[in-house]
View (cartoon, rainbow, N blue to C red):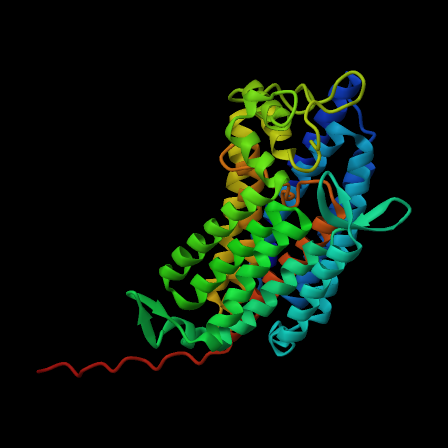
Length: 444
């Protein structure tokens, strides 16, 4: 029972050492001498992860031993790079990491069995929709998108981060209930399988809601994230690839209509296709990101030594601490560092899907798969945008980008995944051993 947690602690140690060395490197480069000023904050973050580790020992000792160390490494790299950009940002982020750690421990303490979420799936789903509606009504428009709600003192919260987890919980319960109807259509139309409308209706409603989200919130990234997660969960539930094909085709048609109707989305796509046509205007962020990636080369100049901040204190790429944190890492650590970040997210997704495969029931599989898809698709959307693989979406890079709502929500998401993992292993350990095979007596 303690073997998994001991392994977890052993893997956490190298992540902590790398984070401390990175922070010392950045601080020393800034001061042109060895500097230990940021170490107290770093030690506080280490204690947060130690508290999460202890909570796992007490509440979920059989949970996956690799997930928390991967999260710790990504968080450490994010904090190091934020300190490189502006030490005040790193201090704020460290506070949010502490809040996220408290949420993590709270989930482990208050949710001993994740199946409780399935019982209240409709209430949770309605709550997620209400959070999005509240954002639509009371949200503040920043940089063209209406994603934040001001709570006083200049602080903002992004309720959509919480809503994405709540909607995944609802979809996991709903698709577990309707999976047979969705997987085995009763008729065909033009050669295409058509499931009953009683099961398909909410699916189409969710498609419409994802497109409406793009229009009302003026946010391309959230619409892609919600719909991508939805298609992933439908595929996990049914195993029918044609759902993904039909959904992607319908979304492409709707996205084209939005592209033609919403000026900001049209400008975003045009800036992606031809960024160098307007390098000082619409294409400025992307052009600066591409130059920064090229400047990093293979190995990069090292942490704290890339050209990210001007002498006046402004970042060379707008929103460097949020949308373009990957560009910052790749500038200082080069292609090798960028690939290492990608491998970190791939490992996180692999562990999440391994938890889904180990689960013993449909709801657990869908819940773990859906939560993993949230992190994986979100990382793909933002990294793909900054390297010009897809249009810029403006979503945050999980565990690395600056932002309290994202950090706290993702720590809670990981806690739910680990609860699922622990329950699956606990149930498997209670299964009776198979009877011994009968051995034929030897013939004389």
